[in-house]
Length: 203
Length: 203
Image (cartoon, rainbow over the protein chains, first blue to last red):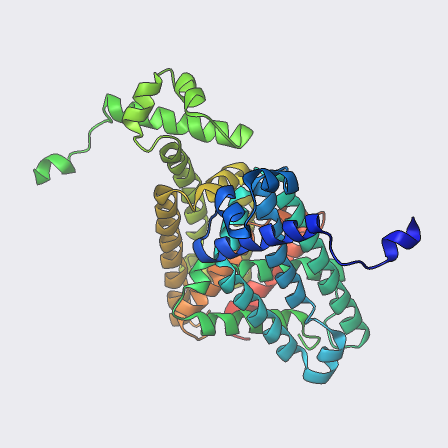
């Protein structure tokens, strides 16, 4: 049993269909900000019955899968918070890369984010995806702060509290007023400075 | 014509019904996070036809009215940014009051906010309410920064850029992870410090 689950096998047909449907939903969301189950079935070349077979939750299940892909990108950006990069490039650069990376993902995925966040109150799968990825991001941030403190490159303080403050500021970047502002580069630079000064040991 | 519109008259019956319906929708949202048009009609003691007569947009129209009431509270908090209070109590206190005020409103109105934000992509009235109040908040913040700079109590810089940064941070406080955190007081204090240090002329 254990051996079997550990063997990496190519995805079976059911899994391939599932992935094709999720990819179709994501593409529709990115292009139009919405999709119907019928459209996604057509795009993936399967019947509506097959969609419901693969995604018993229907549209919200497909949406959750697309949302996961986008949240994976966000978590990926928080992985830029590496203590090696901190020692090599300095806090200012690491923070600037984080902020810029988040702004890029939030901008590129605006339509997917908006559609998914709108369904959050109704869908447990979407809420689960959100919480799960938020927890992953918090782990990355907390670890970075803890190790950075150990290296004397990050201000003292409770790493968990500081991580939540970073998270709040990072999520705040997903803001239509900011993303649509003609002064975006300046405001982004200001928010980067702010985060740097919060984490800086010389504060 | 002009004289007539300037005369303040008590609201007529149609307007009173409208207000009663909006109040019923707000009460339902605060208690349950949702409402049906039928429930609101019953609560206000009118027929469903009357609801649609007063709110041709139906449920979203009622939701927009409730959302406005909540956003009015948020704008009211930004009015704490007065240059008189700055001169009297200092930047740290004014910022702490702003942050605390926002956290209280976001917490008390979580259910209304969540329901309204979820309908934002679908409803123009809701988007309009949001943008209108955001613009009002930006006016308050920008004015505070400009006058504070004139008084030498706020750091130099483009007031419009700085105001958007304050707005982004303020909106970031509307964050379930923050509001639900056991370390909320500490994180809120940290975000207050951050905002204070951004605006402080001695930076």
